[in-house]
Image 1 (cartoon, rainbow, N blue to C red):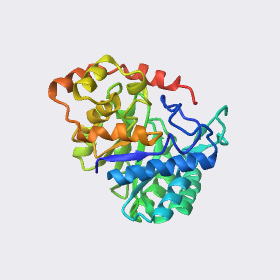
Image 2 (spheres, rainbow, N blue to C red):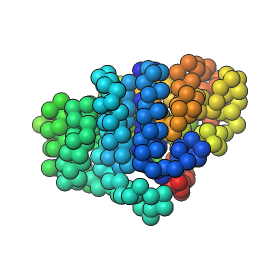
Image 3 (cartoon, helix red, strand yellow):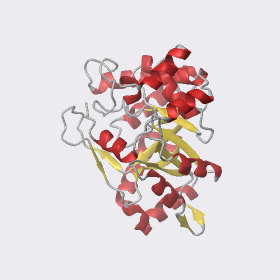
Image 4 (cartoon, rainbow, N blue to C red):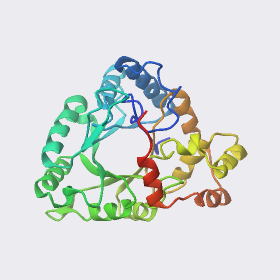
Length: 309
């Protein structure tokens, strides 16, 4: 359980691209109903032994919900990671034309770090650039890189998340960034799942170099559950469990993964995801599941077509 983190992407805002949220979320997705649903999942996750929660400025009110829960429950042993770079602009609407806007700039970092601090204060142990790509302006923005290095020097671990078919290139370029001979980043959070494992070698190398590796989108935004391939269903049936447990267990089977981030929308989904922690996949099963990998370009094209709902 200490290798699992709870992500609030699906609970901090009313709309998201994950499949399988219908019926899991409250019938009315107003702020208070979503806050109550978030608290319920957080309570169950904590009771199960999960001690890491991952949020972001763009996950609607996720930081606010988490801060309120921490204040009410008084848990001092929960690790918090958050992200900056996207701003939530959906105005709590399901039908918003645009839900989030990306900007990697020194001004956006300063503004969002101040917002995160106001809500979570010293609880934030890891602050990440949200969805860093190899062509991000961050790489040539010296004031921004220096600001990130200063944050790291002040005791907050600084990391980045990645997305897109060139994740491996972004990982390698980001970990090469230095200020005064010191690396800027000490952690990475990348998409890796049975359909999109292309960043695996870069993540394994990062782990071997002493970097912290978190894996997100372990269920491929719900595709590995709602549209579970036959191979996943076969392994699930053999173990008497669900496809989500198999997908998460496949991530945990990689010893270079420090945290597998799960994003359930309800206590039932959380319980189903966490069954992965008691599931051991054998070499034959892992081999069969490895055949599910899609072309990265196709995977990310499909992901970009998912509807916010």
